[in-house]
Image: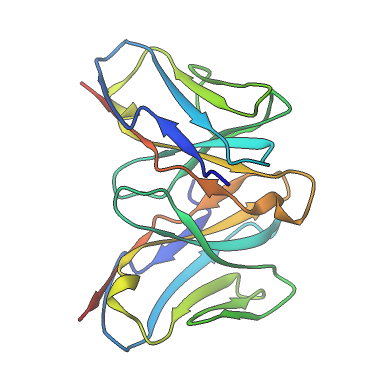
Length: 115
Length: 111
């Protein structure tokens, strides 16, 4: 059983650029969610995808968007990067439809620095 | 608007002692309360969780105490070990399928 893998692990962008982060879900999971973790803070929910559709969104602007693919992998896209977007971006997968719906398995994250 | 307040921000405990981390929530619609453990360079990992219909849950050295009327819950780590040194996050799930995390507690266990 593979865990959740994210890529890239680190990246540096400049203000105004666009970034795409990728996530492979844990085998057997059908739901993926994304979180932003600023330094010294807890993760903040960005959005969740189930059956390739956005299924819940936190307090993030539309320039944060995502995709879920038929194999349950996912992408997080951020347009028009701002300095405050610098953070660790975490992906988590889970199985929707049973008792394990609230059990999240996190990846190690992608550390984004915006200069 | 922070809906889950966690304290303390940092904690130092002697090896073998009891580590206690507290959380308080505001939204009575929360129905699942997990604790996560995060080591540097890693993502959070689920440690233990509780639903509001029970007042306590124990798994090994880790215990959650839950006070529904006070809207508070806490994590107790018994016989704390240096390997427990990590950042701990409490969280709360709403019926809208959204999870809210506390700001975290950095725990350091002295050898």
